[in-house]
Length: 333
Ligand code: FO1
Image (cartoon, rainbow, N blue to C red; front, side, top):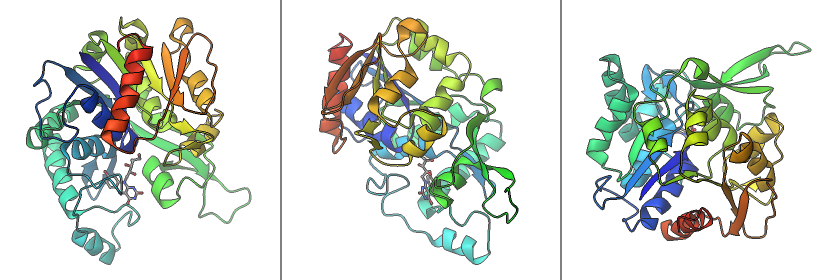
């Protein structure tokens, strides 16, 4: 079975553990991506990427790489297990940039290798493939694009005493981490998306899939940028595979992170139904054939088959049951 998953970072990585289990694979690597004849391809958001200390950092790709390989800190949700923070502490000692962005010592090695390859002219997809040779996540990880796309958030300048305060565009990570998404976002834009092209393999994977899943990632800052890369939304509309979304909202709150702040910023109700209607029905220009929401929630999305199941990804086998439900509701069960 060929499954394609549109994924962000923390939620996307946990969901991919369930996709591996659904296909009978061990959740955690190392494993080959096609050992059992099945194919899992993750199209991963890169608009969270940030260049700091002259290193190119790809949070969502790294969350997927580390989590699927079994070396991530599942509690923290990002970065490596058994991490140390010596370099980060020294950077703070020098008053270096962005002390609010903690970089683990093991994690820095990944950024050093990636940055050197990018500077030597390799594309991000080549780099991701190379890193995967060490970690063997058991899933083909594709960046949504090899081009530079960066989510910026426009807010009233928190450092200004003027009234009214001038507007300033923050990198997503500063808004997300330093300000915990508490500054009202006047706009959230994946800068560069319009000029980007899908990374090699992305369109073919979507066209050749038996099932396409939209992970319960942040619809605005994780799934949104992927859909903003010209060609990807069209590929989803025209693929013969059913497209099934999983609600990232249970009740009226995201399971983790600040998806509620992001949804408010774009005027989408913080409910499963709000996100389902935001994605829309494939029959009228949207994405979904089917949509999985949490037991106890209700959602009517015209033109979309809605099913409800337990949605807490507490362990890979629970997540695999969610994936099985997606396949079932899509008639691929
Ligand atoms: N998230 C935080 O809340 N605080 C951090 O200091 C932090 C550092 C960090 C470093 C590397 C990396 O790959 C991810 C990191 N994250 C951190 C998580 C990151 O903000 C999120 O994984 C996504 O970008 C949002 O989903």
